[in-house]
Length: 144
Image (tube, rainbow, N blue to C red; front, top):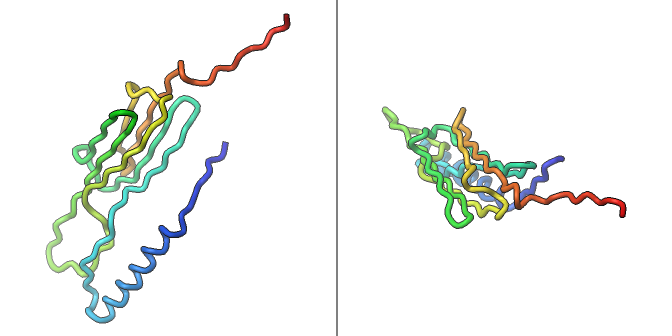
């Protein structure tokens, strides 16, 4: 089955406008721009036959910088990407840093006891099994 994707045009307007402002600032004040990009930790969530899956882009994040909790049907991921120390003068930065929290309300069909998470190659992967007893069951029809 193909996944469907929704796009929000308004999300694309703000970064373009800020890029124009940065360009004007650079023209007047030189190549120094102190405003770094906000780190959003983009995520994808999809439902498979037996599991719910979530992947979050987390480059530069270590295991010590990840906190995952499940409470009252909500999965919360908190990630922190620490800013590096630069030696010398920073001219421009588009890299985002700081803490990001992503919270997702999950359906009742998931089993919180089966939550597993891995962090590899800058991607945090979370998998949650579905409760077998809450899954749709096919009923066989017999002749009388």
